[in-house]
Amino acid sequence: MKSVYDATDLPLEDEHYYDYIVIGGGTAGCPLAATLSEKYSVLVLERGGAPNSHPNVLHFGGFFANLMQEEDHEGDDTPAQRFTSEDGVENVRGRVLGGTSMINAGFYSRADEEFFSEMGIKWDMDSVEKAYEWVEDTIVSQLRLPLWQSAVKEALLEAGVGPDNEFNLNHKLGTKFAGSTFDQAGRRHGAVELLNRADFERLRVAVRATVERIIFSAEASSNFVS
Image (cartoon, rainbow, N blue to C red; front, top):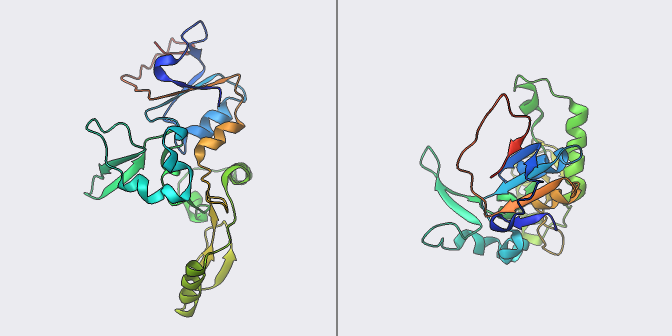
């Protein structure tokens, strides 16, 4: 992607003014930046590196290797960052362009409809549907279930976990199989690929970038990166 730079190599000519600066190039930052770039100039700042610098994130065979990889002494050169949640649970999150979508198991399903109805926000559900389709057309695949997953599915149905919803991207009670961000060949298609939907004339991405301060100014007409 020609718009991706190492932070130390980011050009700092007159174009270093942006309408929007997105901090974090993960599962939220990538689609947000791509969408904003349709009308505005956008800079994405991502702490991790580009996916091709971590080959294990690109295919299913590297899934466990990512989670088992030891962090270096500074803890900043692995795509999976270990952390402990506020309630004491050890976990990992993505530290790579594309975020945790580049290290997870690739399961894709839409949100429960109650999520939208109980948030207290009036959602434009037509726009939500279009957003889902935009993501699904880009990175989601329907896979053939391997033998062991088919066996698990049949066992759930036999145990009374029904109905059988077959393949379904919607959140459903019962048993189903959903989409995957791995394709049939085992290649991962994470959120980073949503940046391919961006207008590259208006988008720049800086990897290995850190943010020390966020300055809010009512007088500023645009954001500034120094």
